[in-house]
Image (cartoon, rainbow, N blue to C red; front, top):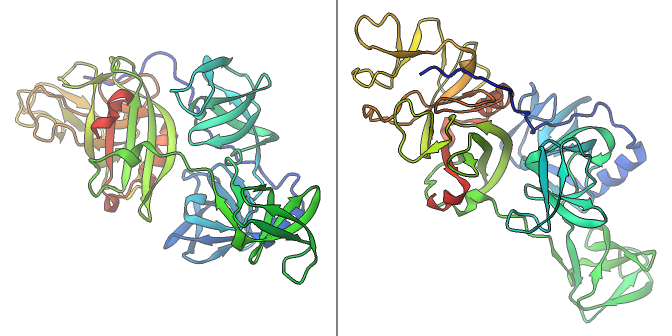
Amino acid sequence: MKRLMVGMALTATLATAVTPGFGSIGENQEKAYAATVTYKVTASKLNVRSGAGTIYGIIGSVVKGQTLSVMSKSGSWYKINYGGRTGYVSSDYVQASGTATPPAESTTYTVTASTLNVRSGAGTNYAAIGSVTKGQTLSVMSKSGSWYKINYNGRTGYVSSDYVQSSGTTTAPTTPPAESTTYTVTASTLNVRSGAGTSYASIGSVTKGQKLSVVSKSGDWYKINYNGRTGYVSSDYVQVSATASPKLVVDSFKTLGNAQQVILVTADNYDTKSAKIQTFEKVDGNWKQVLTANGVLGQKGFSLSKKEGDMESPTGKYTIGTAFGRYENPGTKLPYRKITSNDVWVDDSKSSLYNTWQQKPANGRWASAENMDIPAYDYGFVINYNESRTPGKGSAIFFHVGTNYTAGCTATSKEQVVSILRWLNPEKKPVIIQSPVSELDKY
């Protein structure tokens, strides 16, 4: 049951652009927003990396409560000044207080799918209002969950970010601005003053229910745009309601138990070999999305009841076993086993060693086994499927390197496999869930 990759490779659409230097962001602009926003570390210990992604090397770390000097944002990463060097930290573990946002590193948004629907809202349940094609450049306005809000022929439309690649250095931000916060007046009448305090003269007023254009915050006062002038209002009489963050799919799962890391592998239906891979981690009691990538399944898609040799990937929720590879440990915290030329995985249903990792020679212990020393297994981990080793139910189910199809495993690019291996932490009880989108309510 060899997992030979054939055909043309799919193009990975998850790319994080890292723009060298600081471009057009001037020193005064840096000081302007740095003065109004405090960036503090919320994790006990947070790695500082040389680039905007977990695939980049660690150059140091910061600790909980530490204040960071943030220069810009690239995707879900903050570019910081780290002891005179440039470093990057995940924005998931940094709390920003204030109203300014660091300038985003610039990039181009290009469609990677042959044809991509443009919808009237941020979800597949919204009607398609048109489409864009591969290589087309998009005018992105903001991001809502996994959807980009775009300007589509003068109309507002939404496209899935899974099929849009960000790269280059044009005027669009690497991560589009989040949908805006709403500031609403709660007092019957609220004075607008010329400065941040009651000692300043009133230059006008706003009334209950009125929406304000807030520029920044200074102590207990909001700096606002008031009829083209700069004004200040007391924050005690202004209600802030940020646009609700989209609910993550894992938020509705009921079967996760004490798992704090989830790898979710989904497909549009049972018969497709193309998959979407997402990773999630629970931080301070809330789920955060970490990664999204394209992947592939068995040649014949998913199976509810897998059988040996059926070329299908099993659906279900499974724990994660040993990590492996043909090279040294890439930095995973999982137990790691380096593959040798003698390593095999027994797929002989009649053998007492069925669905186990063994070493040659067979000496009559099995009639067939899969060679582990192949490029597909440059890196990967064991999906703990058929742990009871029921004959004929399927064996050697892995998460490994591959971009076309597998014989029953799940695969993605080597870069993404390594990134996920480095992210996985056995202390967080990680699980992998594999399912068609229509059946996620089982979990």
